[in-house]
Amino acid sequence: MSGQKSEMTDIYGTRLEYSLVPYVQFFLNNKIDGCHLLNLTADDLEELHIFKIGHQLLILEAVELLRQLHYSLNSETLQSLAVKLGCKARSLYNDLKLNGPQDHSESMKQERITTSVLSAVSEILTSVKAFVSWLDR
Image (cartoon, rainbow, N blue to C red; front, side):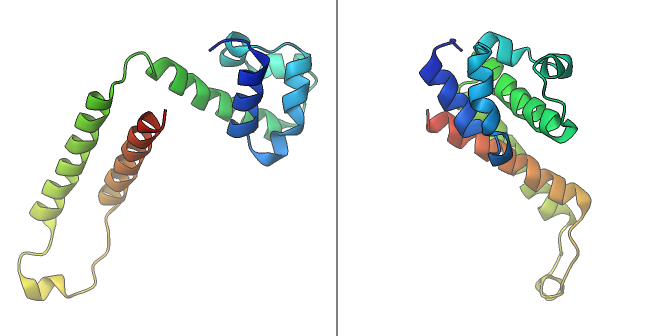
């Protein structure tokens, strides 16, 4: 990630929540470049006179997402993302098939979804998001 102003404006403007938009120009004026952004800590935010805890948390969460995106760019490929997604989907399918209703009359009843199924669906959606964002580059 380079320190070019247009790239940084794009990163700040599209990745942060609306309440943090006023900090975009503040970061640019303080010459917070890509490398510094990826290594930003709560102490750095206090040195920059950002004292609101909620804003610090939101900024640090956004920085963590950028860090994950930045460091995963070098190691992930479309194929690896597709394999991860396929494995997670197949695992959920097998789990539902194994633990689901055994006959048609049972499938008509309303069932509760287990936490493990919801967790698996969440993981699949996260994988889909990563896959689509890779395609969107």
